[in-house]
Image 1 (cartoon, helix red, strand yellow):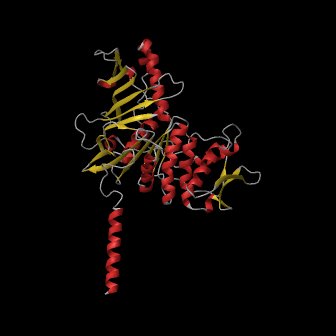
Image 2 (spheres, one colour):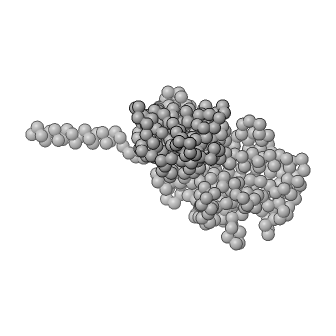
Image 3 (cartoon, helix red, strand yellow):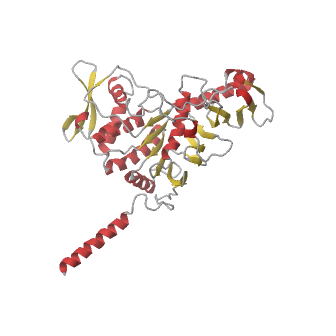
Length: 428
């Protein structure tokens, strides 16, 4: 799981500093402040490692089917106030569980622009434990390879160009001799970490009346939730010890949100088409015939149970089209699932109800400040600024930005003042 992120000269950010990512991390802030950029940096790396072109340095997107986001060109990514050298960087630390030979490490890459306008790695640094491996760009596209704190490169040449931002070339690995397997395992661990990111964007597909199913599990839910239905069908219909695991989990949280009692998968005759039936108060309705909120939150619930253990789940505005109670229950979902399934949530939200319930969960000691982080993003001129909200053990915020969620107490006072004025006027 990714545990820390840092961006420099990346879009709205001059320097984020080290942003600690905990089991439940919430990003709040005004519109167009830079919240999404924090998320997009990880998606940029994810689509790069998934690129079919292993020689690509950074996949800025453009493939509407396979890419998560289209970043435009180098100038669109580079912070406009960046000084010489005109470079941006992405860095993160990670921890992996299980049988990985690399339990954790750090990735740090600086990117510049070539004379032809393409993005090129300037410096790639991979670390694990007390070992460090660095590839540094030289003239004419050649790279020098450094190990640990050595001041002289082990070797240099154009055949040592890194691949997909995270991997040293085969020639570099071979040239590193006994250190080669360490670099290879470290690159693989970073690749797996990025591939295990599950991302759900703010725009999700509308429900259909029925769905075809090819009797397989999807690879992921998809940024628009397109794979959520297939994941539900696979959960309900494929035999095995995990049968109905996702469906039951989704039904549990729909009931806690008080939007449905349970969800059912129903086959249409003997065809390969299936309906999703929503049960509530003794009435069974097709998913298409219930409020849009259920279909929009389904991918959120599905990915929470479908993403593999150890994953990082990134959600943008999971609360859309939900009523206030359901929004607040999302906080309970994130806290519970992060603990039960060993996944990490990064949530970008505008929901006061979700945030307030997180405060309550802190006060109830259902989550601690060690396992949760709240960040507020705002603009200072053209630059984005990050403020970590200081919450105590009772969920109280000591450095809350004034007016972001409005002034509830002030609104109440104004309503009371107007009521008394009207009553006084009527009495006169």
